[in-house]
Image (cartoon, rainbow, N blue to C red; front, side, top):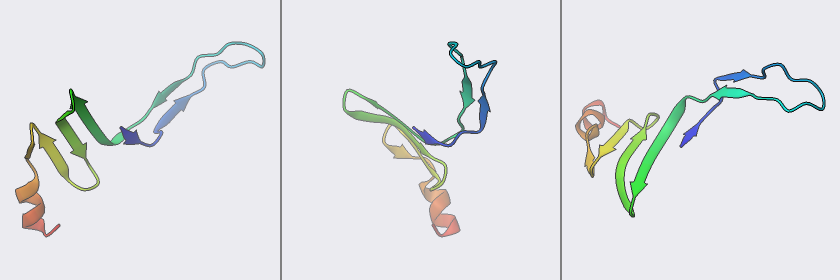
Length: 66
C-alpha cells in the first residue's frame, strides 16, 4: 500500500499521557499477494487495475495513449 496522509486527528494529547491518534490515508497503490500469486493490483496514478492476472484498464490506457 502507498498513500499520503489525508487527515490526522491528534485526539486529546497531554504531555506524559498515553494518547490515541487516528489517521486517514487515501491510497494511490494497493496490491494483494496470496501464496506468491498476485490477486489484485490497483495503481491509481498509472491507471492500472489488475484482477486475477487480467489488466482491466489496458484498453482504456491504449485508447488515451498512455
